[in-house]
Structure formats: C-alpha cells, structure tokens
Image 1 (cartoon, rainbow, N blue to C red):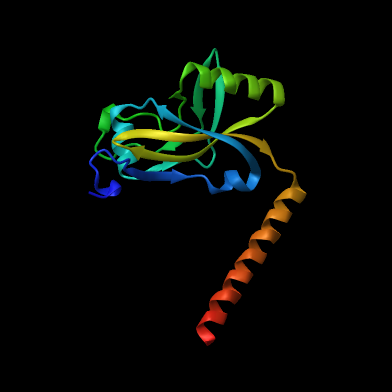
Image 2 (image 1 turned 60 degrees about the vertical axis):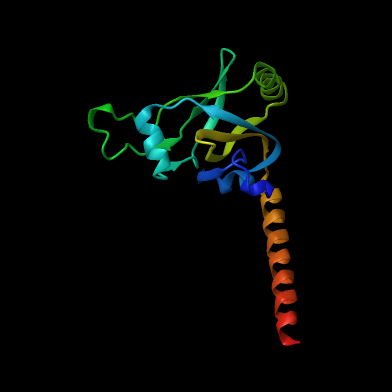
Length: 162
C-alpha cells in the first residue's frame, strides 16, 4: 500500500491563505497552531467562508490570540451564530509559546497567519514569525519574480519549437 493510501495519512483541506504576508514580511519561522472555535464557526469554515488577510496574532498573559480574522456567519446558524471578527485563542505547546514571547518582545518581530486549513478534521492555522520588509525589498522581490517567470516562459517556448 502506498503512503498516500494509508488511512492515517495527513489529509489537508485549505480554507484561506494570506499571500500578502510573504509580500510584506520576511518569514523567519513557522508554527502550526490549533484554533479554538465555536460550532457555527467550524461549519462556516468547512464552507470556505473565512479571510485571514487582515489578521495578526498577539501574545497576552502567556497565551496566543488571533485578531482580525473574519469568519462569515453560518447561513443556517440563526441565533447561535458568532460575531464575524473576534479574538480567537490559538493552541501551542508551552515551550513554543515561550520562544515566541522572547522573539516578539526582544527582537521586535511580528506574528502573521499564513494559512488556515483542516488537517484530519481539526482546524489549524500556520503562524509565521516575521520581520517587516522595507519598500526597496518588496521591489527587489517583485523584479526577481518577474525575471524568474520570464526565464521559465522562455524555456517553455523553446521546448515547443523543437
């Protein structure tokens, strides 16, 4: 049996991504954190109704919270619906939290969510420890990506000619 056919293989269903994070920040390290949600939030996430583009993470009294994430209220949720934008607790091991506290407070780094997904039925979010980019860094990255795209395009078109 192939490893992908195994019943215990990690099945990952992406819900939301934050592509602007890699544009605005140098990603130094990443962690996968669990997220505390209510029932209607989970149902809404399974429908793909979430946005993490304006979200950020903050440390408060030794705990990590995700702020600014928008989960659209569940259509059939009526009075049990949740507020769309609220503070949501993230679940990490104590040692990981201590490392984050040291890095954020001492070095002035930011915590930015990169992706929200389900893994084996549980909602997870990838949190990145990141340093903000300057304007010239963003321009250099854009130039580098354009050059890579043009070379790939030239290689593809050259393969078609022969």
